[in-house]
Image 1 (tube, rainbow, N blue to C red):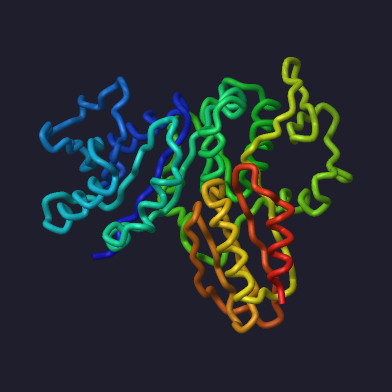
Image 2: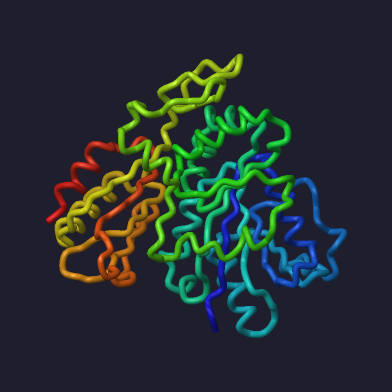
Length: 352
């Protein structure tokens, strides 16, 4: 049986997760999806329910989707779903897990890697984070959970963008990009987003592609001193080192969730790098949200693809370096108050 792809849907209260889910559960998209909800909100989706077995807490939707609420922990629910699928009692092609609005998606993601039984049945595809444009600045300022959700994301959907000005939206996107330069951002209208943009994003795939916004890298090169960071007249910038435009916004956003990139064209010494990274995740693991890199290693002609979530990390051999391709390493770290200097210096010292 091939692995069942799983998507984690996260986002702060009111960001539109339920709207998106209701569409997934009711629309005639031809996909059979099992949705695991940590909680049903106030609104129940029971108008579409054909079969309801309250005992099992699995509800079959008219379009073939399945909805189940978690009473026990996630592991038990996933194992039960996989077993029922194997026995032919349930038919579904993928799973979406909706976390509560204040949840940290980290432990949910770790379930897929730590637990052998789960790893044999499921493949974690990506973490999607919904951000409410209207209330995001306040939520990101006040709540670390909201900042963590952004740091974990493989894809960010910004809802309610029609309720803010273009300047406010640009400033928000700029802010999110500094927290997480790996995740593409897209403004969406009330859950009106193509399923192709929600599924099969392969955010946890160890592929040779490391998507970091190229402008972010350019900015990173002159180390945020902004020699070349000019704004067009009237363009809002909410870079942490600027107070950004817009009447009442005079505070700096110096978010604790930040990202930075390590780049080098020298090869890594595999043993030194492993020692350094093991030591780092021992100390800072809980604050390291996502880290991912394509690395140039001594002793192999192939790219080494590396990634981690909290204390869990893994690497894999990627494709060969092409003839004439400039070899080099690029790694992005996203975390909470990580000591950038220590990390960059340690990476530097792990080079051959």
